[in-house]
Image (cartoon, rainbow, N blue to C red; front, side, top):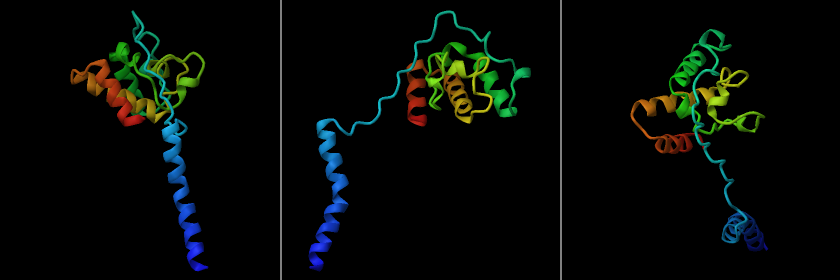
Length: 138
């Protein structure tokens, strides 16, 4: 009888592995799809990015806004990973740094800006920057 209990326990322990294996073969257990990165808009500039004097955040937030102001055309081609892309009027990470965007209080948005600026300074292409953002934040 003890052996039967162990077999049931063993079966129950293996059940999730079996279901995932079967599900992945049938397409049930697929990873959620990421939204694609947006295409940078033509003629985009930093005119709508909140000015440093108006940033309601700490020194790190002000620095992130300054970085975004330097490369708005690159930031506009990146999707933010903090979930703000579900907000009405959102287009790209650049939206997080405009008017009522959440970047002043969101460390994820700010960290995106720092990484993107650093990679842009290193001469990385938009595709390479997107890949690095996906690798770090996805």
